[in-house]
Image (cartoon, rainbow, N blue to C red; front, side, top):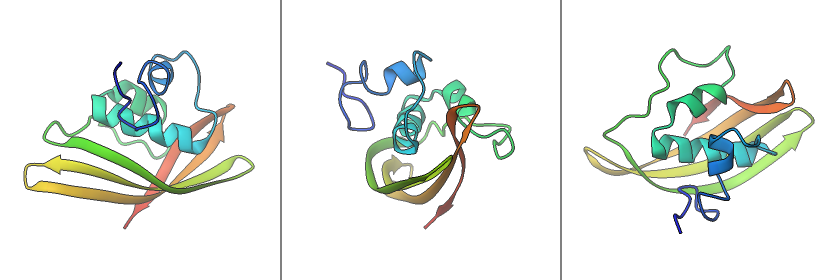
Length: 121
């Protein structure tokens, strides 16, 4: 079985259905996990689809020189149609290992959770 990049099960039952459009993320944390997996798999279409149009950059392609190596969710919260997720994403890059720490913000738009922006620590 193919382990999901987000670390929460198999890809076929975890982030795969979200990436294929079979269902939407139920929470901001689930969306964050699926977006991490999309970065890991280079799925720029999913990244664009789950990014708020007001804050989405023109190019959402993943950096091919980065290999994502693990995700740790530090905490998440939901307040009505807004949510936050704090996480650490580990990677291997051209200059060696590193990590990205972010406090991410999400909103529910048209019934679906989308990523708005985040503060990188």
